Image 1 (cartoon, one colour):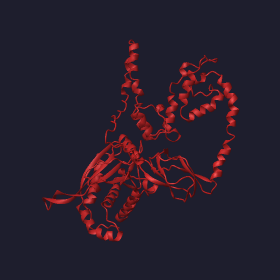
Image 2 (tube, one colour):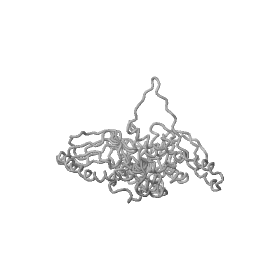
Image 3 (cartoon, one colour):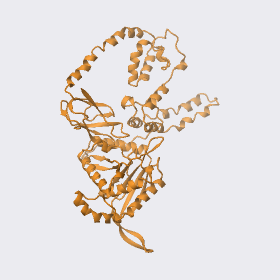
Image 4 (cartoon, helix red, strand yellow):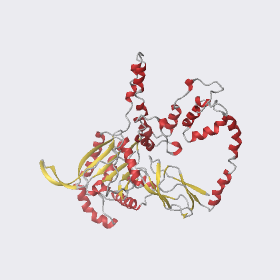
Amino acid sequence: MATTIKMPQLGESVTEGTIERWLVSEGDTVEQYDPLFEVVTDKVNAEVPAEIGGTVTKILIPDGETVAVGTAVAEIDADGAGAAAADAPAAEAAPAPAEPAAEAPQAESDAAAPAVPAEGNPAEPAPVAEGETPAAASVADDGSAEMEQGPTASAAPEPPATPAPAPTATPAPSPGSADADGAARMTPAVRRLVREHGIDIAALQGSGAGGRVTRDDVLAFIEKGAAAPAAAGEPAAPQAAEASPTTPAEPAAPAPAATPAPAPTPPAIPAPSGGDTELPLSQMRKAIARRMTQVKQTVPHAYTVVEVDMTNVVKWREANNMAFKAREGASLSYVAVVVKAVTETLRKHPTLNSQFADDKIILKQAMNIGIAVAVDNGLIVPVLHDADQLSISGVNARIRDISSRAHAGKLRLDELQGGTFTVNNTGWFGSVSSMPIINAPEVAILSMEAIVKRPRVMEIEGSDVIAIRHMMNMTCSFDHRVLDGAQVGFFLADVRKFLEEWDANTPIG
């Protein structure tokens, strides 16, 4: 029996994925959990394993194609009956053409009927002739019912033999049904983006599953300048006023002035000149570009930076690192220390461990800390699930493990999902200040910068002295829809206090 392999859900806000390349071919035999293909999304780059063992009978989606979550991408035959299963649908489909043939006379007789029903209200089913039902259904399936009705009405060469409905019943774009369908196929974030740009939902064509409108559809619509139909109608009000200047009610027309201006088009890119090299974007780079653009356009970022004296932490690490390395085979990371400080502090500031969901904030119970990992072709964020339940040694071991497997492309799907807060170590390459982009739907990300020796004024026994200390900057980017500067400031102050008061006897675990 053939089992259908579908594009998996690779994150809470991920709606589609790109098959970067297949690792198997049709006819190959695979074991359960063997990797089938590499998938790239705006958050994930991972291998998708086989749900069952068997023979790969069909590959439905080729390399490089982007499909919605839940789309069938392959079939695996677990018991060798793949050929029979493949022939069965063809045999069952053979008698199917007989049904349209039976309906053909009725459709032909109806073809001579006047096309007046297309002029009427599409919500009234009676005038739409029985023989036209199959055609109308097929048109509605691809979301173009209204577009098909328009030409049908205009193509009628003779006046109808039956009384035509009153002209007032003719709906122009049928906004009610389009709005209802569009709204049903949009996430709250996409609906908000549509409202912000003043886009008519009826004008959008959805590319997602079942005709769902995705954020990419809206952004593409804006880039084409198609978001300006409302703006194009602005001159209509002044023209009407000129046509009937004596009408006293006309001064109320300036309402369309509130229509938002169309999105500015990006500057033209000059053609490559001599010596230039064009590098095509990888699937991961495309996903990162798309995701970062979406987040920056929809999430209002704000930033807070604090300076942390890491001297006590540095001394503690120097005192314990040799024994730890001998026991664990790896050095003790400062990232593990900062993650421990973050999880302890998030207990007192739960709003930073949350997600924004359009009309509500979801406070997350688990503390799943994402760790940004730079790989050869981009950036991924594997997740330490329940990081608050781990010791410093446990956090250190998990970070080493997921980092090494991230570079090898061996992360499991569950290790790339469910993050609630992200820690980014930009200091490993010497950065002292950065402004990270939030990993939405999370509401905050913390960047730890390089630890450097700097002079610091300190008060010792009532006197100010200048001392050389190990200093580190921390930057927190936060979603201003959920958090304000004071909340983030108090959170960072507590993280700083936790690190600056680090006890030399703190157990590693």
